[in-house]
Image (cartoon, rainbow, N blue to C red):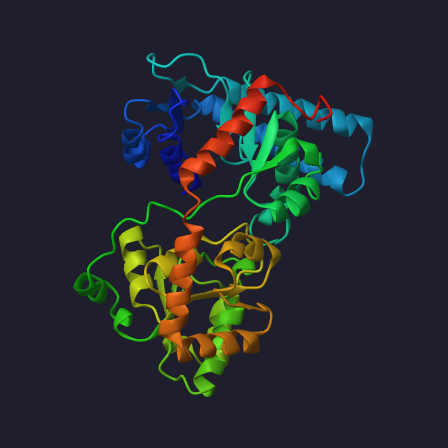
Length: 406
């Protein structure tokens, strides 16, 4: 979503000559609409899979890199171990540097790379700006296999170190994750807040939505999120049981996200007696999600860690009042809504119940205030965001200001 909105914002900036979106070979259709929005200035570059032998080599080097990172994290800092880790890092980069990338001959030399995430293994001869959305993997153990975490941390540190500049959309993520966890100097980081998404699309029709998901005809709370511990479904499930006891027995809970239900969450549904009131829809397309927002009694986001929350603004856009957890990054992200979205302590189900009950008791007024506030928040356009990112990119092209002490 970040890439699509930013690219479309760049399409409105005259000084942007060419933008090439790098995608995996075969995925070109996923960016076709965004490329079309560039009016001839946008193109795609296809990144092809590594040949079989190279895939085997990089897996071998990554496996050994993981083991060495774990040894170092456990306190083994022998120079030989550090040297071996660096050697494997160099080999991995060398392998990915040879990965075939088909660039359009109509586009000239690249001025700068904007890397939208840190999972990048190849080196870049040109200046680069890497975007760090968050380091939730390093905060919650179930996001990634334990054996891969230290290697992931090291890779992120390496990418951040090698980048000319580091970008993020959140001061909280800058301070806690980029500087705090990755050890990046603060003067190398640029914060560019995002804007309200523009690619909302169109919702599926009511009849079709009801055919696919009959629960849309009942009052329900909506939470679109994958089943990860930091998404905090457990608090919302417990809150649903308490809401039933507090005079809202009709309320259902609709969850979208990954297929399959974690055993701990399934056990909790049984324990609190709400299994039949929780509807697991799995992964849904964006028109269906928009329709679910439209029919929801409200949207509740009890996440324990985020950079921001597109579901909150999407929900308000489609007519569902929203409430979310009281965490620093969401306070920052929603500050321009001027208190229209209520916050709650996400570790206290009864606080969730209090907020949900208050919103439902005055739903129309709450929604009206939130939509008015969202209109104000939306005055910051993605063109403005793009212009600010271009300033960062230009700074990277001119050289690394962190090395000049700026």
